[in-house]
Length: 132
Length: 92
Image 1 (tube, rainbow over the protein chains, first blue to last red):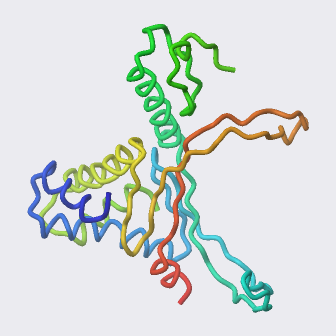
Image 2 (image 1 turned 135 degrees about the vertical axis):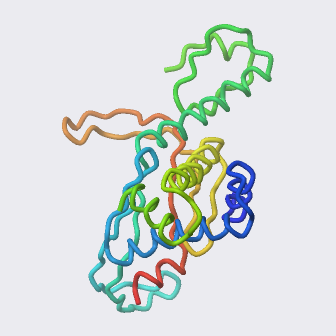
Image 3 (image 1 turned 45 degrees about the horizontal axis):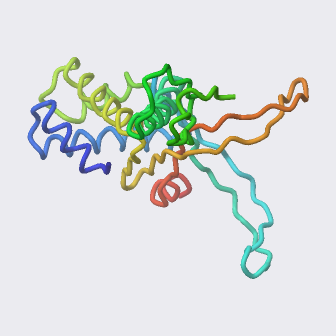
C-alpha cells in the first residue's frame, strides 16, 4: 500500500474529495517530518514511536574497495513498533499459518500453533503434533 | 509529538473540518496502516519511508540477565526504513 492508496481509502471511508484527502495525508506526514527535524520524539499510541538518533563522525570503509572514508556526523530516525501493533503483526503470521493448515485438510483439532509459527507443515498429522 | 498534536496540525492547516472530524481522519489513516501491516502487506510513503513486515526464523538466544540459553521463536516483525528524502531533510 502506498501513500496514494491511503489517500483513496480516506476518500471512500470519510467521504472526502480526492484533493482534500491528498492534502490531509500530506499534512499528517509533513507534520511528523517537521517534528523529527526539530529533534522531537513522536509517539503514536498503539502504533509506535519515532526518535532521532545522533551519530558522531567516524572512520568508515567502503565495503567493496576497502578504502577508508570519513563519515560525517548525522541524524537518523528510528522507529520502535508499539505493543499493540507488534502483537497484531505477529498474530497475522499465526493466522496465516492456521489457514494454510486448514487448507491442507488438517482435522479440526485445536491447532496448537505457536505464535509466529509459519512453518506449520501440510501433513495430516500436523494438527495433532504438539509444538515445542 | 503525539497523535493529538497531529490532529491539531490537520485542524489548523486544512480548513473546513471540526476538531472531531480531524481526529477521525487521523485515526482512520493510522488504523488503515495498522490493518494493512497486520495482513503482512508493506506500506510505502514516498518522502517519508517504508514500513515492511518481515518473517524471522527461530534462533538461539540467551537471557542476558541469567545467561541461560533459550530459543527465540519464529515471529513476524515490523521494520521501518526511512526514505533518502527524509534522511536528507534531517541532515541539512
